[in-house]
Image (cartoon, rainbow, N blue to C red; front, side, top):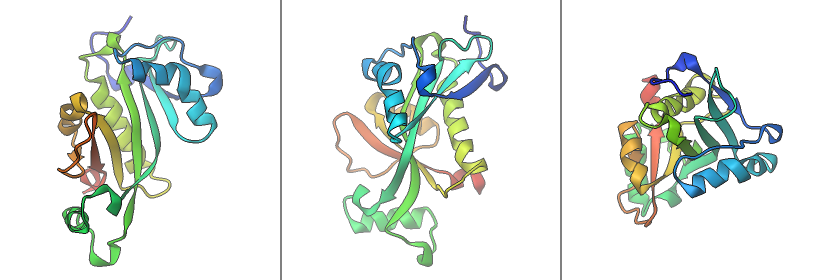
Amino acid sequence: MVRQYIDNESIRFIRLQPFNKVKSFDCGDADLNDFILNRATLFDKYMLAVSYTCVDINDTSRPLAYFSLANDKIATSDFPSMTEFNRFRRKQGFPNEKRLKSYPAVKLCRLAVDICAKKQKLGTQVLNIIKSMFVINNKTGCRFITVDAYLAAVPFYEKNGFRMMNLEDNDPHTRLMYFDLMDLVA
């Protein structure tokens, strides 16, 4: 039974391991369901991505949400021209001596909320946890969170502070977006 309102004290995040495979999850998207049910542990085994489930502390048997993370970078190749990349660097406030060809990021590979927990702002709570993971305990140096957002999810990410990487992104299924973690530090 999911509570009417989910708060930070009633949920916890568990790193998915091969021995605690998810048996039941339905977010309404077959690809996202298939990943957490069948492929997430293989991505972890081959060190390609790490997945976390979000569970109610009173019922850890079924995830309310999950997310997967992998290393990434924002680089010149993400922009249609060097001019656009330079605009991006200036907008982020990089001084001239820190204008590199790429900047460290973490890729939010997947994020999904189970149908039973929809409309409770859990997706925003999950994003806030991810942001805090890299602001409070930034072990390797990570400036950005990136996501290839499904078109239908773009408004959700925008509402949570993500911006379009470039306006010339014409992928028919996703948009490359980023969140600058310095927005939380400044």
